[in-house]
Length: 265
Image (cartoon, rainbow, N blue to C red; front, side):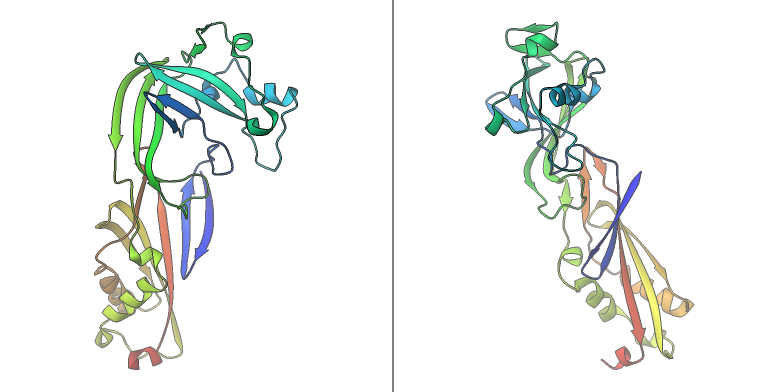
């Protein structure tokens, strides 16, 4: 599990994520479902052990343009008759080079313009609705809702829809709002006289709803630690994020430097 560290305002945000080939720098596959053409966050060709499509395209002269450009194509899928089919594979630069893979030359089960995806078993995710423009993770976008289509050897055995995939609280989005809230809730009667400066680290770990989150505090003085934890636990809400039915593990760290001057402000 890789980790990336970012600084957002006064936050140090640590996000656990695995390498994801459907990052914003890569074209997502698309799926035709009924009358809709939609993006998908799943890449079924990665499960096909008999075909290295990126290697095949490399030989055709389709090359990456930048570091990390590992997906050289956009596949098109169709959902029909309770099955998943591959209908096209386009070059990632199709608008310029007009290159489309001849599926008949690569798949023995090519029939009527389609290839049954009988090698694929797993969940096929189709996002829906708004997404977070400032992504909570560098590897992918989090959408408001998503379809989870469960596939077994190309046959669809289950379809579920989940909404409310994320909530973005003012306390993670607006400048300094979290720090101001906690300082405002501090009862200075419980804070001993500060000589110099006291450094405090407050850590927030998201849960499965805006009311469910964990807080921990680090401070050298036990009284300060206890009071800041009490104040932080008065927070009415926090952000949360789901993707593919699972909570994205996001931890926020809020550093505060405390001084005696702040008692009077």
